[in-house]
Image 1 (tube, rainbow, N blue to C red):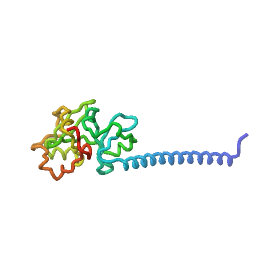
Image 2: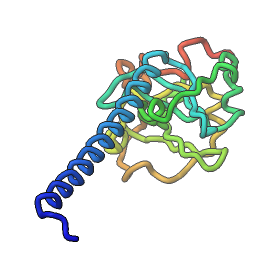
Image 3: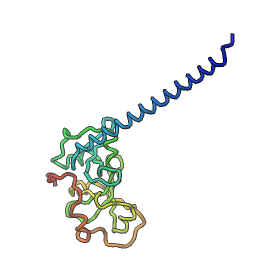
Length: 203
């Protein structure tokens, strides 16, 4: 027996109401999870300091962080390429590596720029498995053309610098110049981030 049209219309409206309610609830729940992850990341970032070493639970990569807010980022992070590099620094302890969320790691902008102790040359590192290459950025124009920032240069000890093979591929289209100089850019380089604020004991 056919149901009255009024009853069919009521059922249709009720079904639409349930669908809308479910969609709204799902959206609110997902937003809540996103907010929760964002708050968790912010809370973890607030507990980190210059020179802290961090990783996520699901990834073996270990980074050292530098607190230097810029844009959407809380600072810089640098990949420690292999255990040999880590062990070059006596003040770094495996037991001190902090496991954080992926959101916390992503809150730091990756940098691959380094220079050695008392070495005016600035290099960009490129990983190749567990080894890497270093390419000298030959002048300031090249540095700026690549979009780099002075604050992202990390000072490393010379043993680490010498572990990397020298690359020949230019960072950008080369131009003439004498290379980045510690003296020429002393006002920029005097506050360069080190691998840690502590004295390096594995020189």
